Every structure is written in C-alpha cells, then in structure tokens.
Image (cartoon, rainbow, N blue to C red; front, top):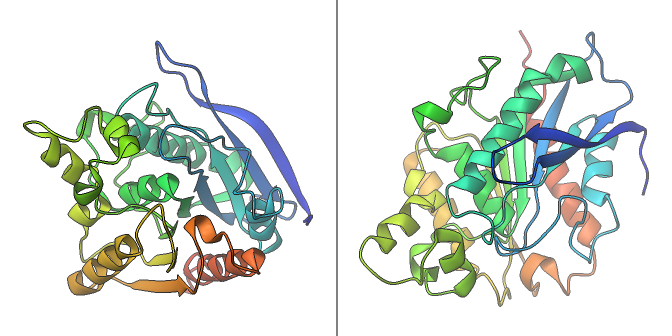
Length: 277
C-alpha cells in the first residue's frame, strides 16, 4: 500500500536525562499546509509495555498500513516510541505520550496540522496509553511544555485495539506487574493498578471512543473492551464497540486485517472532520 504523503523520520520529541532520546515518525498528506491544515492521529505500538517499536505494526498488517491509510484519508499520522517497562515504570509511558502530543501540537503549523483535531490510536498496551491520555487528568508539573502548549486541550477522539482497560484483575500478569513496578501484590499495588486503568478515569466529557477487540483474544480478555465501553456509555460519553468474531489478539486469524484498519480510519474521518461554522 502506498499513499501520497511526506514522511519525517526520527524526530526527537523528548530528551529526558538518563534515558535514550524519544523519537517519532510523522506521515503528512502532501496537500497539508497553512491553508489546508489536516487532523492528526498519534499511534502507539503494543508489546505488553516491555517490547515494541514505533516503526513496526502487527505482523498481520502490511508495513505502514495504518499510516498509509490515514494519510490517504487526509489525516496525518505520527507513530511514537515511549519508554518500556524495563526502562521506567508507570506513569513514565503516559508522560511520554503526552510529551509527544505537546511536541506535535507546538509544531503543528510547521507541518500543516490542525492542533485542535488530534486523536490517538493504539494496539494492545499502546491502546491503554492512548486511552489514558484521552481520559486521565494531567499532573500540573507535566501539563505544559516550554512553548506553553497545555494538556488541558482535550484530545478529539480515541481508538483502541485489543487493549487492557482495567488493570486491577490483570495485576498478576508479569507484563502488567513490570509496567507498574511490582510483583502484583503488596500494599498499595492495587491502587497503582487502578490509577493506570482507563476505566478509573471515565467521565461524561470524554472524547468519542472506538473500541475493537477480537472475541477469541487469548492474551487480553474481551471483557477488557466491554468494561470500558459500558463505563463510557454509563457516564454519558460516546463509545462504539466492535467485536471481531473468531479473532485472537490483535486480530490474528481474521482474514481481512486491512478492513479493520479501514473501519478505524473511517471513525477518525468522521470525528476529526472540521467543524462547520
């Protein structure tokens, strides 16, 4: 798959003392510019919080399928690295996602991006981080960068693929325990797991969510999708849940993975469309 666009590779969005520089790649439609600013979707890779790379999509997708499909729809796509659980524990990963969004917003005019129309999309662990960025309140000391861009400006839409949303019942999974910096037991650990759970932060004014999950997922139970969807609806927010019949984690076994990408991009095309005066 290919689409008309410009790719900016290896942009450094954060330099944190004691850690590697954090990079992102930005795919921008060729038609984007000051007179035609385009929306943006930020992609977070999966990998159980302890693996993964911004450059590589799940193996059942064509290389760059997510980014090319977004660009073909007139939406810029950023794919970001973040600190893994072997490097830092939660909330470092959420801080990284927020830093990437602030960096992209503060440079939006440079690339012809509309900083008010930004969505997030992640698979597996990346979806957890995207949902937290869309829902959880930001700490005051981390809420601005040097340019004055604030986390108070809400994200406009969020999509999750096969993502953990309530970490409390998953706290004994080794990947979750590593992410949260413990063994899954001990005083206070359940509170940390709750704080790292998107379900804890659901609110009425949440951005619209698109939640997609395989109903035969053996790594992340499908109930993780259902509980967030139901909580969002109960709070009065908007959420759409799509269960993919017979699909395992990240839709392994589904015959048309590109069709699933198309469904999510259609959601962003609707939700990130410019507001008509």
